[in-house]
Length: 484
Ligand code: FRU
View 1 (cartoon, protein in one colour):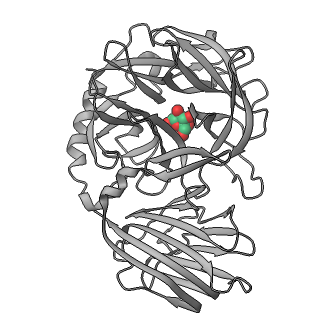
View 2 (cartoon, rainbow, N blue to C red; view 1 turned 135 degrees about the horizontal axis):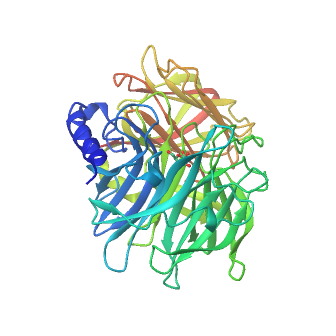
């Protein structure tokens, strides 16, 4: 083991003990210590789920990318495993960037990641050089391959940048070969997804440009993922520098899902539909795995540069009516305790609270309907993580079909994005919400998972009140569980 890796492992072990259980979310992943960004190597290996993550153990800022590591049997209760990778080689000394994991024929686990180095130009400026490298291990300790890097500038199609060539996502094809998709910047300055093939996981060959951005959805496409689901092919990616299109995409780093069909001869994706993956505030760089029972599960970075970094709740994906649907993993049902239910509660120009409906680690289902279909309410609001001082609000206006999340009063002391709006694809007669709270986060699944809004909150745990407001007359059903 390199000195650098040993140092990281010692450091996290000692510092990690200083963090109290209640300072972490109950079932969302946080870094052992320090900083975390993208999920990496999300996979099932030898009876356990593995998740690695972009990790800087030494401070709460992005720097010197290592791979942190956690394992779990149920995707909800995670145990820390020592740091898997450190940027300790010449070819990756500026970082072990994002990547993925898969089991090899011989039972070892392969990690494939972006190795970052730098080069000095004639004018004295330096720039990153991104290549792909692999490491093999047993689920705990990994050894980098002697012949790294395995993909370099010489494996790029014409015009593709060697500065932006990152985030390999690997899978095993039906033909027995390994495939991977990698984010790339073509000559037009936007993004594209490259497809590579390998017989053994070590020797890789360029196959095709699977999809091209052509400056439509942001610029560079980061962290691609590609899989078959419900008879379609799905490409997930996280574009940088996005522009909004109505309420579909928001400015800056965003998420994109393209659904289509694969042209099996040209190895290109025939696009049919594009949408955001998450319509909330904090969600980026998502990655998926296939479970032994055939489900496709996605996890994302609940991005936030100011507070405790965490991953999202793992979500089950499906394609319905040509769109991507997401629901909380079914494993969460086992954590549901103390069911409380109310039906047909009418709120008429009023704010109400309901006995036993409160908490910060909860799973709550809501159905909101107009009391009178001819005279639909103007506005409905759900407030949670609430006390005299704080609350976070979800507010729905049926005449616009817009759901807004607002964390302005969540205890945030920074000039961050505090609100986002989502155009709900329903009618005014029924809005269904499933709200999952876990201490520092809220994830809202809209209309059985047709859309999702995720956000980190900053609120003291004492603020656990929940209230309901309606302008006009709304009628609600509520089912709430504590998650234990
Ligand atoms: C996405 C990203 C990836 C890169 C990693 C570096 O958030 O920029 O493209 O591999 O973070 O930490």
